[in-house]
Image (cartoon, rainbow, N blue to C red):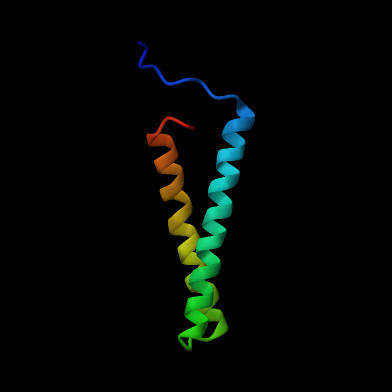
Length: 70
């Protein structure tokens, strides 16, 4: 039984990156909504959402790389 990772075509890798970006956008939206509900101003909520996106995307890409998907 071979333990080598199966090479994925380019389109599958691109779709995984797209899923990762969309998941990061979802996390950013939830973070922004929660920041707004707690009483922060709109610029603060946008900054919170941007920080959530900036932290989620590299984390998800690192997980995909560790799983040998990318």
